Image 1: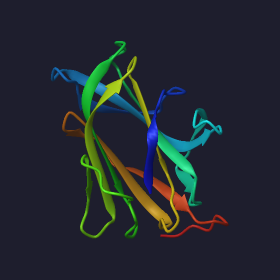
Image 2: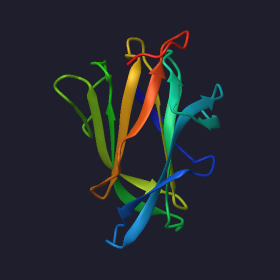
Image 3: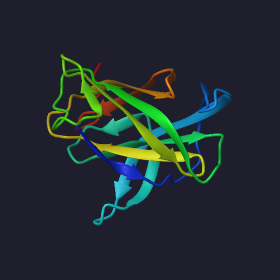
Image 4: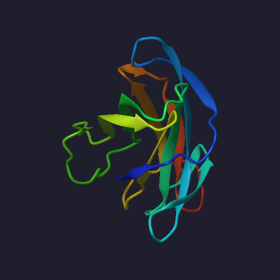
Length: 161
């Protein structure tokens, strides 16, 4: 599994969750997770929300996050946490990334910029990433969201636990 990049958001959002804004006032976070398509230059061409991601090396999936603040630029601390069904290779170490000792959990906390209330980021499936239930969680300025369940579907589409 490797971080693929940060991109401009492409579409509207579904799930809205209560969070605390940078100034402590109530805000909401919208989250969509799905499959990303990109052209040969690495530019995102489409984003299809889906709870099922093909577990095929090179498949790109990501999250489109939205906050109620539509200012041109809002900087917030964002934690992204992915819990895999089994250990995986998360790639080379990064200063802002924590990997659990059992290699199942990837956590990154960094300041990110929401442009006009939106932030989009993508990851790429690598050879050996396990199929099954994957939990994704976000925290904005330390306020956690409930986890989102997605499923990495093995080639052929048979469901695994």
